[in-house]
Image 1: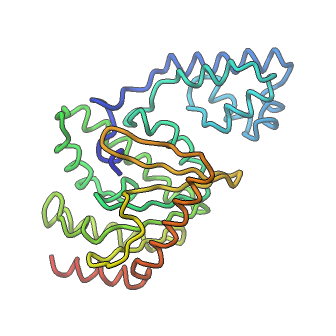
Image 2 (image 1 turned 180 degrees about the vertical axis):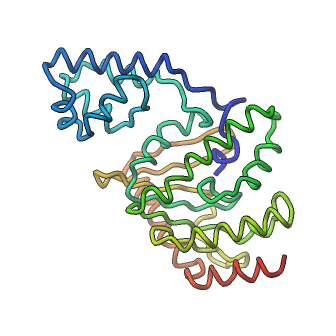
Length: 281
C-alpha cells in the first residue's frame, strides 16, 4: 500500500494532537451526562464497554466511526459529535486520507488486500519498511522514520491480536522479484511472509508474473467488512486515497477480487513459489 510506505509526517500526516482527543472526549462526556446516562448505560447504547467509553472521554482513545454514530443516536442526534470527530487530529504515522480507514481496520472482521506495487504494511519486516521510509521523497529525517516504524509495528499487531478476523492477501510475484532493500532484506521478508501465512486467520496467494487474464489491472484495492457486516473499499494513488462506501462500487470491487483469487496460485502453490524464490536468493 502506498499509504503503508508513505504514511507519517512530511506531506501526508502530522503527530496526534492530545488536545483534540481530550476536547472530543469532553463533548462526549457532557452529552452523556446531559442525557442522564452512566458510562455503563452509555456503553450499552454504543455497544462498547464502560472502559472504552472512559478511554474516549479521557482523550486516550481515537473513536471509530461506529462509536461516533451510535453516540450521536444515544445523545439525541445533535450533530455535535460528528462535527467534533471531523476535527480530530491524525494518528501518529498515518496519512490524512488513511485516518478513517485505519479506525475501521481495527475492528474489521474481514480484510482483503490486493497489492501490485509493494508488500502491504501488515506483512512488512522492519528492514523492508525502513528501506521504504529511507527512500521516500521528500526525504524524512531520522525522527520521522522512527515514528513511522513505531506506527507500522503497532498496526501489525492486528494479525495476531485479532485471530477471529479473516485476513486475505493477493500479492504480485513481482513485488518479491524486485528485491527491495537487497538480497538479505528480501530473504528475511520472504521468511516473515511464510511464517505469517501459517496463521489460521491469514490467507496469502501469489499472482504469477505471467498471467494472460487479470481482473486487477486497475490497481491495488482493499476490502473491509465491519462487525455490522457492511463492506467498504479503499483505493490508493500517489498522495491520494479514496474510501468507498457506495454498495454498487464495493460490489464491483468484490467481484474483481473474487476473480483474482481464482486467477492466482492456490495457497499451497503460492507457498511453494515463495520457498523456491527464497532458495534462489
